[in-house]
Image 1 (cartoon, one colour):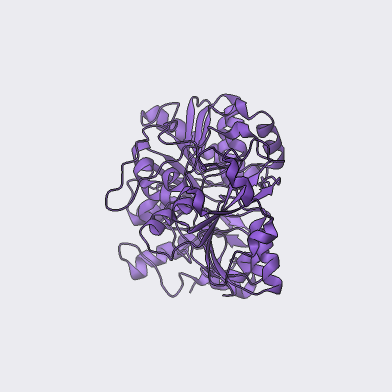
Image 2 (image 1 turned 90 degrees about the vertical axis):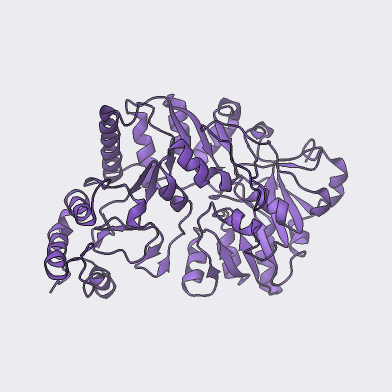
Length: 501
């Protein structure tokens, strides 16, 4: 089954089943797993651990690159197998356990996890589970569809279990670029000067003595759930395309723009899809996730090159891409997430960052993570890495949600992930607010005029006018009313008809 996949042949004696691997874990261990946005994750061992925990209770700390697929997070939560989870997740069962306080969750900038580990700010990793498509002659591994934090986990873990996935074609070898900045205080500069810079090796080094098991799998990644652009998301994309055209006309950008970064989800996907039908050309991408729209842009010829940390696509795209991966091999690259999300590189390349907000307020603060300020949705992901350091920091959201019962533009966000200082542009289907060079009161008026839904615009204007007249200040607010929209949502199920005294 694994012919030509284990080229350091003495390691063949370490082949075990997922169930045998699950027996290697002990209560209170710190466990790390490959995986970034459902790509390249553990597909067998963590599920076997969940099954074991049902009859042999234990709890571990689990860290990954980002979200896992296969329903793994949910299975672990249902088995009560986790005490702490970090730095990102998207599973509804896990989300419920986090919000009930049954699992502690550290929501973390994805570019920081590896650095915090290397600086000994977390306990030592006992076991790392890493997916690979090949074990090379020197014992190093060729990752699959993501890199994430795998290189750091391999270096720092006491023991390593390799999930050797035979479903991933060996043609993927050569697409990974593994580079480490080293340890404090003598860390190296990251010599990436353009999106297609290659600075490292194509495999992750592992001390063979650390390997305690090899589990053979043949399961593909969980497919991304991609929603087709609708009227609202298409309008957002059109507003952005118009903005970029105006920037080109001013001489601020060229038709090639600057390297693009886009978060995941239907809004970001629609924005990238919008470039397919635009006049822009010779685009590049320096991002985290390469999704369906990335490959559409590559196929259209609009996008020359894409750098990321994972390939996370729908099933149809997965089948098509990996049926002939050589078509894309020289046009994409996968890096460790502390490199793909490095502030140094983001600022040097002048990234145009496009990320999704749950809600924004009238001064430009953005909530990406917490529903009504308290309940975790997924996590901040890499949006903060890019927002703080990009050439242009853009946040997109529809103006309303849940059948217009929720305004996504509010007087004051209920949780702040990205403060007003890190936000340049806010876009809804209503319009685009360019906040650059504006003072807080100016920003508020532009956001109200351009981005707020008509159902809420009059009420928002009233709040702002009264805040300026009655309370004043650099950033006027009526604190007794600032969260009244959220209070109305909790009490009535809608932000509409909020009574402002």
